[in-house]
Image (tube, rainbow, N blue to C red; front, side, top):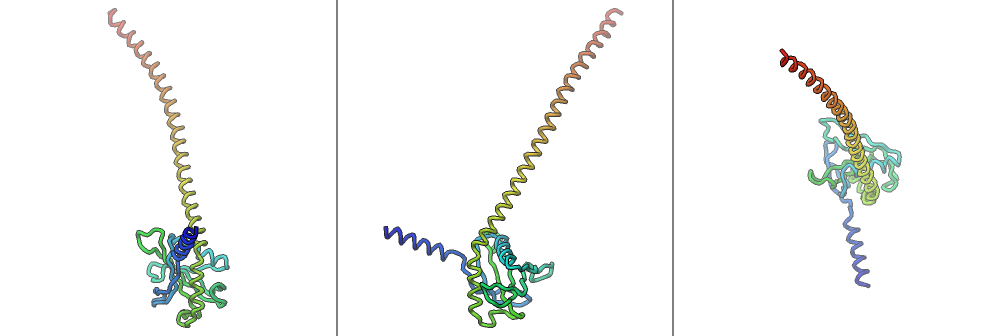
Length: 213
């Protein structure tokens, strides 16, 4: 019994530590290398980004998305003057980018989070508490990402249902059209048979006249 309990406990900790854990790294934004908090998730980039934006939307913040064909920062989301009490009581600029880990990895994404205050990277201030809080914030996003991923699955399934329903409706419409054509074909056959009989009768009359001449 004790062995089973130990196995369950060890399994729990293996699962716990196998979950996403944020770490420090760098990325390029604003034409310069920036220190950032990174985290890898086993979910699609869309699910991760949707979860992050939804979490901040609940706090009343909407991002500005960097766009433009020649914009090197394209894809970054910038949340200006944002207050996230879980990270710090100060307002910061949170700059986020979510990318696929590789072309083949459909459900593997890396989130980059740059924290700035008055244009300066928070890392340069040496405030480890804020950095650690940012890591915990990202570590604790799994339930939000799971919910966002579920919504994407539901949306995709709804699209499949709609597609199948349209296909079924098209097939029913085609069936109705074919049935009408079959009925018309049957009527045309009957009329053609009558026409053949009349033509044969007329032919018989003509042939009969030839014999009497």
